[in-house]
Length: 177
Image 1 (cartoon, rainbow, N blue to C red):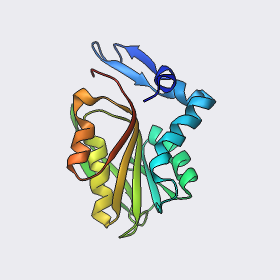
Image 2: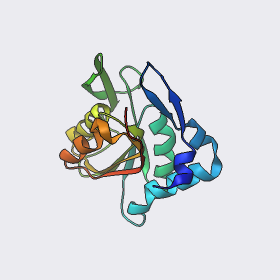
Image 3: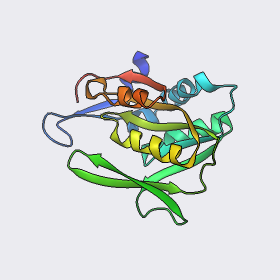
Image 4: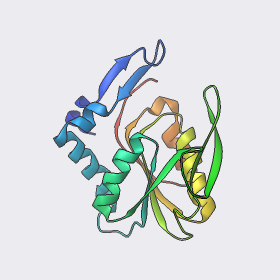
């Protein structure tokens, strides 16, 4: 955890509702040095190892995941909201704070035995990331790690992913919601 990366994340109080502090990484993405450093730090544990694919969760996970995939010479897999991918898909339903949503990926995006890293901007309750892990594993690929720039540890998401047997890498933590 580095203070300069942490300083590059904008905190927006009372968004999307009162009492919530939104951690906005668009400021980090817009700072060339911070963006480069974040990608380098996300990639570091896997540099020199064989990673076949990087899966990114819509939408900020696409930005980060694409950069991580490039650094690892791996393919990139988008995990999207239901109905956004044009070819045959596999999908999974998952719980949100106020209901259920679905996400999907192309059924041929990963193959059994491939080594995959999951990437997103932030881990909070872990519901979305846990669903993505399940989706990748359903096809038979191995989820080697889940990587996030920001962890909100009070919400327990990173531990939820670790409980699924997936190592978690985060670059910084913010207390609260």
